[in-house]
Length: 449
Image (cartoon, rainbow, N blue to C red):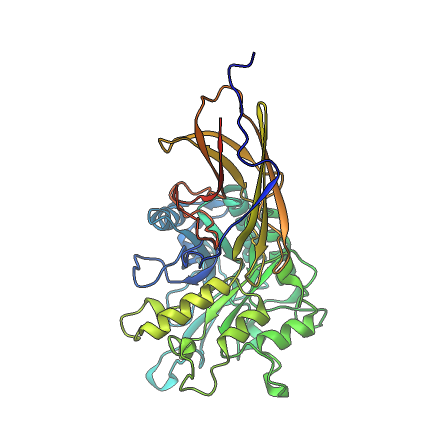
C-alpha cells in the first residue's frame, strides 16, 4: 500500500485567473533613465554611453574595468544595462583610443549644428576619425570580437546598441556625410557584431535596405532604435519626412522585424513629459499610443519621467504607466489546469500576450510547489519559455513533475519566469494572483497530498 496517497482536488479542471495590471517595472521593457539611482518612476534598465578609449588601451589590449564598474553599478540596483560604445560624441571628449591617435590616425574637427548645439557659442565641436584607416578598422573588428567573447549573454546586459560609428554612435556624421564610414567599413563592423553576439540582442539606429550609399542591414539579425520617438516616428506622408522611423522601416522592408528582433529608442527631448499629456502643447509631438502600437517598441530612453526639472503630474504618471504596460510584452495567464495522479503532477497555463511585441529573452519558465510554510519544495521547467509569443496569440505552456517523496499536506502551485540577474525583477504577470503567495510568482492553483 502506498505511503503517499494523492487526493485530487482538480483533475483536468480549468481554473480561470482574474486579470489585473501588470507591474510597471517589468524587466527588459519600459522607460529607461541614464545610469544612476532614480526613484521617480519604476524601471528595470539603465542606459549609458561609453567611449572606446575607456576600454581599449592598446593594440589588442583591453581594460574592462570601466565597463565592469558600469554593469556592476547598474546591477546593484537590480537593473540591467543598455550600453552604446562610441568613437565620436559632439561637445564631449573623444572616444578614440589614444594608441591610434599616437600612431598617426587622421581626424577631422568640425562644428556640428545639430541636437540643439549653437555654433555662435562655440558648441557642437566634434572629432571624426578617418574611418578608412586600416589600423582603426582592425581595431574595431578585434574589439567587437573581444566584447562578444566576454559579454555575450551576460545577465547584467539587456541590450547593446551597435553604436561605434558616427556621432553619438548613431551611424551618421550629418551634415558632414562625406566623413562617415564607407559601406565596406560599415559591413565590417556589422559582420563583427553578427559573429560575436548570438545571445545579447543588438539594435541599430537606421533600417537600411539595398542602397548604394549605405550598407544593407535588413537581412541581418538586428533590431532598431528610434531616437526621435514620438517626434519623427510616424509616417506623415510628406516627402521631406521620409527619414522618419516608420517610413524608413517601410522603405527598408523591415516592418516585420519586431517579431524576432527588439525595437527600442529614445523619446525626443522636445517631447519629454509632454508626450504623456492627453493634448501635448507641441503640435510636432506625435500620438504616443499610436507610436507604440505602430513601432512595436519594447523600451525607450527617457529623461522626462526621471527629471526634477520636468513636471511629473499624476496624469502624466498614470498615462506613462499605461504606455509602459503596452510597450513590449504584457503576459496574462487566462486559465490554468492542474492534473494530478499517483506520484505525478501536470500543470498547464494558457498565456496571452497583451502587449505589442514578444519577449525576446530565453529565460526559463518554471513551475514550483510551495508548502504551507512558504518553502519551495519541487520545481520544474516548462516545455517552452515565454520568448516568441506574439501579441494576441494565446499559447499553452506545460509543466510536469514527480511528487515522490513529498509529505502529506496542501501545496500551492506557482509559475514564474525568474530573472537570471540574481536581484533582478522576474517577469510579472497581468493577473490578480501575481505575487499573492510569493514575490515574482503567479499562483495558479493548489493540490492536496
